[in-house]
Image: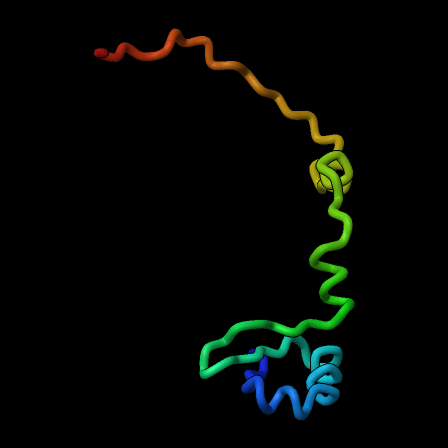
Length: 83
């Protein structure tokens, strides 16, 4: 779980909090007892907003790549409904 810091304390200890973000993970800042923001490392930020893998690349990595799938379509006419 992330450390929670009151904003006033965070202002005074900013360099320590920045170091903790990179070493221990996200740090939460609260204002008047309400958690308002989360500080994260640049590395974590890049991971979250970085380029996303496209669907084709995702499927190429699938453990089922090359697996022959035998599908048969349901040829029933459906069901009767009252309108």
